[in-house]
Length: 429
Image (cartoon, rainbow, N blue to C red):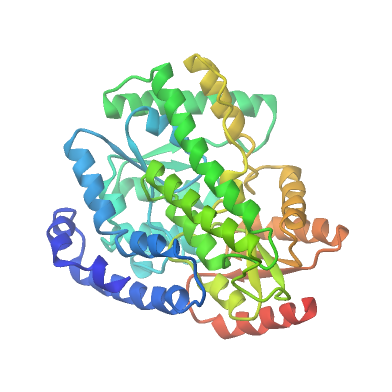
């Protein structure tokens, strides 16, 4: 990742975005080595993985250049932290929807001047990236959208709003009829705000196209999920996670085409019974908190312990791709209703009760033939820490073993994690 991403050609652009160039160079250097150790060291990777390597190598380079070129043409960039922000509406207003930096220890000391030390790593990370001037996606965004998916984020956005204006969507905490009505009003409010920011108006044709583009991306990722159910596993969990992570940054039509090509290659592998790991390697599913780029620590430890990850029940996984928006609507109102219905199916741990998630976790574990589940919670993430107990109980009832892991973005606990995961994997062999 190191070389291409630190080209001098991009330095002028980064300077204009007011990044801290020295700190940014250091970050890219560390990530380049980290990426090489975790990804490029893998054997028997797919040819299509070259695309993933290229996108990652240019994630702060050519992709940011594309955003700047689009902005020069009058298009707007919307940056978000969560799968609840409806990409269909962003696309319908000819804006670009991108995820924001939140997956590495960056500017933690600075962040702790604004938020408590005992805050989850993801929240500390997005504030740290801003304060340390390290995230070109954030600096390229014309509109930043936060959401009320947990108390930590909700309060952190108050501090974040002092650094950069942040629009907040209120996500309901139940799945009641009243909650559904609230969420529809929030989707309409977001649409009105984005119309103001872009100077454009939603039309049925544009919204239908936005829905189809987002659905096509989800279908490609659903196809990937289905292919991973094969034994032996045709792709590593690390590469599959990378695909899901890149889906938040890359141009959606290009990404969809490339992932379908990669799935064609996977189909050939499945037909020829070719795997990335031995057929008897324990098959694990990851469940829980999202893993933003470059949060690859846990998958690396798991797959270095003789297991293979065959699925992710997470926002960077099936929680984001499982449900499609109904494409049959013809009016803007019909399509907005379909968008509202689809997003209310997301089983985020912010909901109470959240029985849907228990059903979805067990169903996915069976579908992908997982031998066990590792439930991942970021330290201080109350919603997922609470739900880990319920998920464990639901999986036990189906005879599926689970290991609960709490960690953050630091590398200090790698040996301890390795010991626990190796012991868990041994019980499955």
